[in-house]
Image 1 (cartoon, one colour):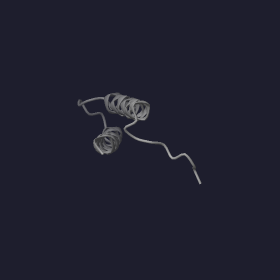
Image 2 (cartoon, one colour; image 1 turned 90 degrees about the vertical axis):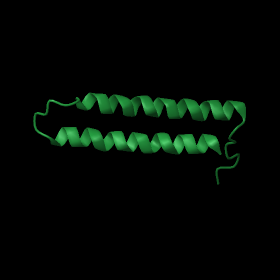
Image 3 (spheres, helix red, strand yellow; image 1 turned 30 degrees about the vertical axis):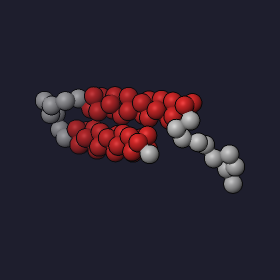
Length: 69
């Protein structure tokens, strides 16, 4: 259950960074943080999510559906 909560929290964090990058993109020349910082955070977050899912599958914390239909 804890793994699922962590994955959902990381997904929410990824969506927040998506909207922060959109806000920076829509502004004119702002002296703030560059958009690539938020996009980089999204990429790092998605890598972490994939690694957590693979580790949880390998250790048996979550089980894949044996019959996909």
